[in-house]
Figure 1 (tube, rainbow, N blue to C red):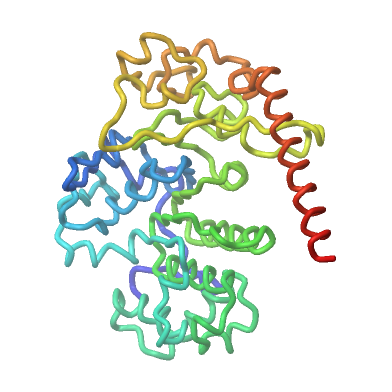
Figure 2 (cartoon, one colour; figure 1 turned 180 degrees about the horizontal axis):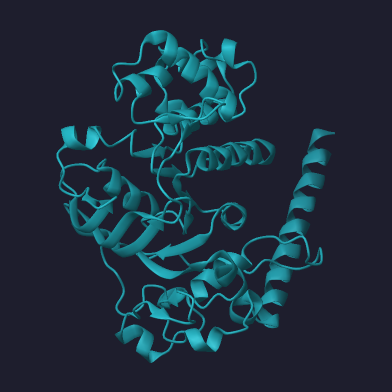
Length: 384
């Protein structure tokens, strides 16, 4: 492994300086032709990712989070129409042939997929799959060295008894253990960038915390940049430096974690924050959901895509799609015509329903409870 410097605990250590830009994405657009028309899945995504930095990409399902990263990795179908630029350490990734990308994937840039059970081959041991990830890029490494490296990797991501687990098959491990194996594979060759696509989906809270801890440790040990894709803002708050909020295929707000959570300037971001339960709120406090559904990527509404769901929309919102504009001097940008009016606003200020709506909702809920109780009484009487 001539290109990897190994630390005393067996984990690779990156030789690049922390803070160097490793991934530059500029005006990335992805469309898919269908029988019904062109689906604009990603529209104008731009960001720079520095070594050691973590970027969280959040948004509802269908907002383009995963497609953005799949385009960078070269994993989209050939029918996908991709424009823009994605440079890894100055090398353009878009347009490379698959054989050229295969030399980069798993070595310079790695991806952790959402479902570890389908990411791992069920007929091979986890040790075989780990060593394969190493030896495909470093064929001069012998089997004994690769096996020891696999044991060290499993130990570094918190898998107990790695000497035994290295010979286990994926079905013999729990969901959390399998996800840690996938993380170990991603960090095996000291990548410059690790992309984690919703790595905690379908895991309980305790295992989720353990997996995130393993991911954070992996990032620190290899000094890699991290892209964390998720719909869980709680995950983003504790494990990223920057946040990119996506809606309808495009970024609608971007800034530091503190700026996004404490000074949001986009109604959609406020809606996402308001839909989260908080420990510092009263037990009777109601969540403030974002009503409606995301727009069709085939027939986008005119103007701002969020307009049909936004309680602040005005005439200009139907005419002009707002560009990303600075809202402070620290790189915080927002795509909203009224970003300035949102200063100091809370989710309740923007999305809270009227008292009349609450009373109607309470009446409906009470009627449903009463009907259910009556049905239960009727059922018990029939049983007698």
